[in-house]
Image 1: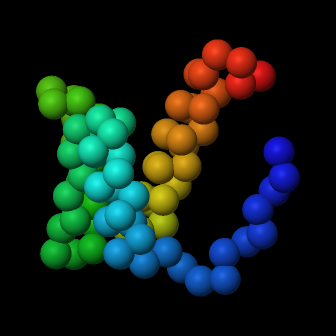
Image 2 (image 1 turned 90 degrees about the vertical axis):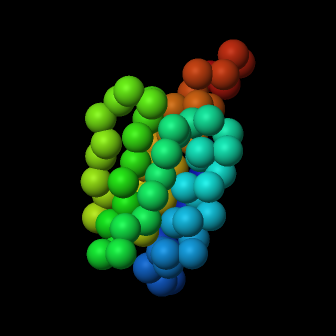
Length: 78
């Protein structure tokens, strides 16, 4: 795998919102809600615990983790 260059700017709320929307629509998360304080509340399953993410960077990190896990579980990905 070719490493990506570092980001030139911090993730934005809009970028985090777009990723959160995709994760929910693809049913990789049950819910992701932006709070007025800029934190995100995320829930993996309807009856699961609610986690607090501190900001957009944490949402993008979660999306990357989910994406990595999903790709590594595909047959023939090794």
